[in-house]
Length: 116
Image 1 (cartoon, rainbow, N blue to C red):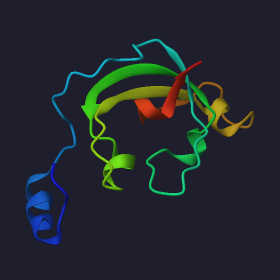
Image 2 (cartoon, rainbow, N blue to C red):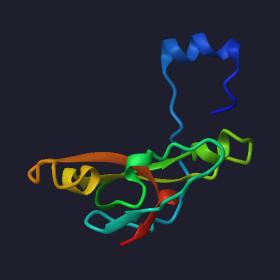
Image 3 (cartoon, helix red, strand yellow):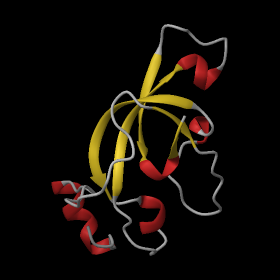
């Protein structure tokens, strides 16, 4: 996707858009791998939710390769990379007061993750 300019907004809203790219990028993770989310605190744009930073999860799915918004937003290139669906227990995210039976799955870019 090119840079979104004001004149393109009506068409994108009407037709949708994706940042998925057909690029062969090596996968660092596979379904079932345990990961830890990096504790990043960039000064600029990030799509990494603060509540995930430093938390452990398990890869549930591989969604394919997408443009990395952190670099793309700052005109530093597309940096295509895999996005994974990662399962986090509620206790991991919110502490002992959360239900131990519940979890959530969050889509996480490869650059935000390390092996656990």
